[in-house]
Length: 343
Image (tube, rainbow, N blue to C red; front, side):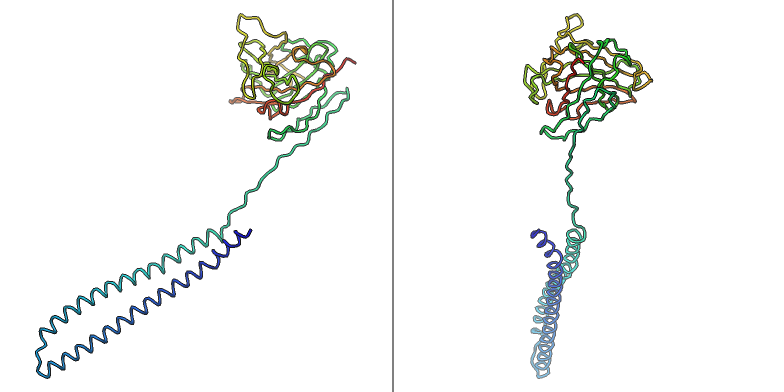
């Protein structure tokens, strides 16, 4: 604050004072030059008058006049040139300095910089109801985009009375009462039984049957909100098959171990489909998954920490969805889902 005040004082007061001082100095210099020129002319006039008097008295002063006139001309020329140079410098300073001073004054005083505003993002998680009545779609709150874990509401899965048929065809009866989670371009539906965690990725916005898309599921197996190499898992597609890879670090994962003729390294299943669902009667992209609870080391009544991502292409561009949005900060703010127990 003090520095700003000093700067304002210097720009608003010192520059005008400096300008006045320079103008006064310029006027004084010009006055001095004029006075010297006047005195020199008076002296030359008196000297010529004295020579004329000597000439009238009979003295030969022609040679003296010639030599003296040349010296006087040369001297006066030098003085005239020097005087003109000083006068030009003074006049230039009187023009340039006011312009520079006004420019600085305009920038610093009339056009002060706009202070930067800092926005703080906050989010308040919305608790989920534990009721077994038909749930309503609920949009997940956006975690604060920092590496500090934010409070996460525990979502409650619903019990699958009959196992979901993982065939890529969405049956309303199979997914009735499933936990719905908003996924920007569609919905996630989650159910479980004693053996599997069922996940439906229902991409209602992708109505293009082009067989393009990819998804992955990340599980924080030890639930410590950080990557434990060789323990935490990622399910993804590898050459058309569901594959398990271990996380090796915040941005590294094991390579694909499945091949066209290899045996899958997981008992979990997935199927991609294209058809209607309870959220849209228009055919669209869907993925049905059944993840074995034994593989993610979870049982009914326990909580799993889950992140979901999928990529699709529609409306002329590729779309990336991360749930939660901070999924690129591995395992910090994953969804926490309490597995339902058999009624």
